[in-house]
Image (cartoon, rainbow, N blue to C red; front, side):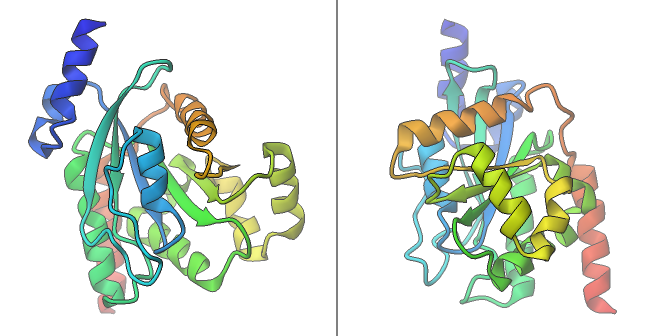
Length: 229
């Protein structure tokens, strides 16, 4: 127990070069459009204001950053959260957004355990569809199997959420649902409940294979090639 706490304290220094020193760090990447609660969700998970929160007009996450915490109750151990630039950012060209987004890999040299794609509960808008498509194109088709769709501002239970998605979600989202790791709703206004819900979902993937940075590099190369054609 004391060793685990000491390792966690080393990680919380937020120095990317220490990631290998921290052993088997459980890495989670936060993805989403600006203003949907991506950074707030990261703060709820790690239990402190580690990430700047957007006003909704432009992304507060201009660059990738990370924060670490120790999952004391579950099986994740030391967890590294990587916050990324908001997709569909209004202040930057799309190519620059994706270039900055891809830098999350520098914080996760050993691969990614889970991506959390954050969407504000309500209508699945064209910008959400575009962001999900860009995420898949940039990271590779297999990334969706490592991605949990997280609806913020959502008080709908899991069974009801799945029923609503199956019956009312737009066709573009319904096509993606079977490819995703799953979907869950949280309300960050109730941080304890939101954290418990997300932590349980993360614990479900502890023993799953990581998404490797080699796959990310190959996918990024294909994405850049298509843009140049």
